[in-house]
Length: 128
Image (cartoon, rainbow, N blue to C red; front, side, top):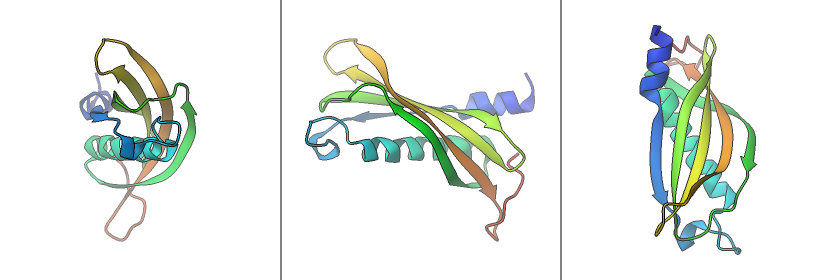
């Protein structure tokens, strides 16, 4: 395993959240904007853990809301670096939903976020 592969493996980031009423829409499912915020946050943490540099989100790509996430479920967000460029990396994020009172679990949302590493002058810098 090369250094990049080790960094990718060690930087995988997982966050668990409970879906409470203040994060849902009028259909009592997780609001899409809240899901996007959580995905950007976990992917930012993953990109930072990967590079150990200042990073900023420069784009998100095709987020698929495959299944609704009802109020009262647990979600797990899993972020992993999927591509590495000279100054940027792409992080794939999946959200899995779990029923609180059974072992039912399935992927509900997936997407990717691209980050660029920046120096103290906010200019792109090598990511690794």
